[in-house]
Amino acid sequence: MEAATVDTAINLSVLCGPCSTAPELRVLESGTRLATLSVRCPAGAAGNERATSVPVTVWDPPAWIDTLEPGEAVVVVGRLRRRFYQRPGGVGSRVDVEAEMIGRARDRRRIDAALRRALAALEALG
Image (spheres, rainbow, N blue to C red):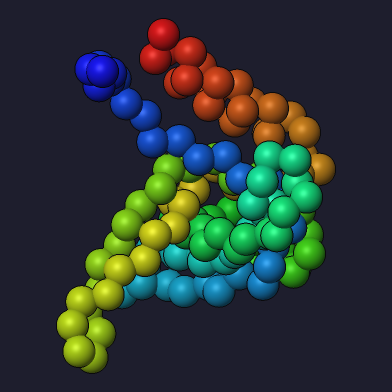
């Protein structure tokens, strides 16, 4: 059996769920704001499996992120990133979703627009 080839590829993540923890906000030396948070998502499509907490990074987050509380539902559209860092004993790594858009789940207009962009990216694959 011959392996299928992939002519195009896409790195797209869409998460919807409650925040596991309040966002951690930092200002880097460059002045860039950075928020990190976790979104709790069901592990299975049916939603009946154990949930997993997915780490999310938001560069230059919107101001409302400061008021986001654990349990508040958000939608994140972004891409998976693997980050490497130095730690005692060697190099460590972490995988997270780098948000291109984050919105409160109740903000339907913003969420619908982001999901349309995500769907258009998938449809472009053919």
